[in-house]
Length: 102
Image 1 (cartoon, one colour):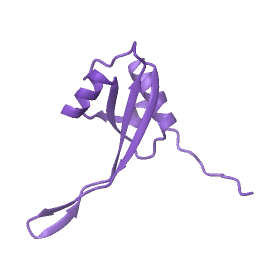
Image 2: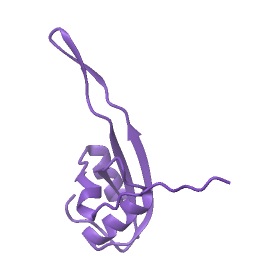
Image 3: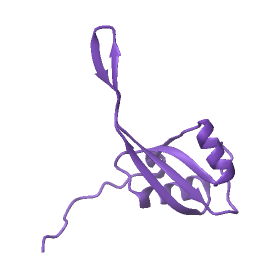
């Protein structure tokens, strides 16, 4: 059996959660499902995201869903470019908790 001897990078909470994603759909989910959306560090795991949100906003997290969003090809004049890849996290909170920044 092979052992996993990778060194895990320890991220601080403010390095994990980069910014909230404020959209119409995100606001609807925050009001109706108590689910908040954040852009997070691509190296962060679900457990890292849960701990960071609980520490930064002092709330109880029930679940975390993540999406790896691929960059899109964009054209500027005669050149083709690509936007960066990023990771999105949807964090569901306990019913008694709310985040006021939204």
